[in-house]
Image (cartoon, rainbow, N blue to C red; front, top):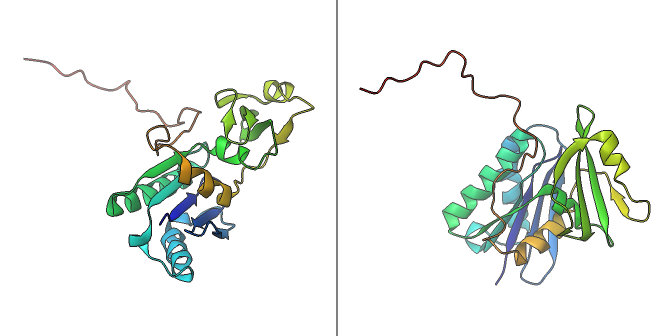
Length: 200
């Protein structure tokens, strides 16, 4: 029996999906910008309960890895890793731009507003098949890279059911559940006042 739980907290939504053994997918979606941490395990419990299963029945957990909200990503990754560790089951990390591309009908470009007049940009040969690495570009350059004949996706929201289906077949060795921020963190360690350690 295969039972896969998918979690997405990278965007202003809490999205969950349960891929059942019969191939059907049940989803839970809350439009929330904050408060993922307080709600995530409650919603997981509700999703499992209405499908008459529990944590011991899960065989795999899938989680989006960003780019996205720094806090949101940490919550989703922590929840997924915690469940995986407790149940000793694989945890699959799916980059968010790839996850978004799963809803494409063919070749696609994912272009998301990253603020500061920048964009997250990646090209795909088809759903879940990257042509280029994910990168952050000046918005004007990203927009110049749009090909009129190729589907353009600009929504940051994934289809969580498709993420569950993808993650159920993904190789854990190549889908590591680690945050993919793309842009460097704004806060960096301060080193100016650091005192050098003297080795005796």
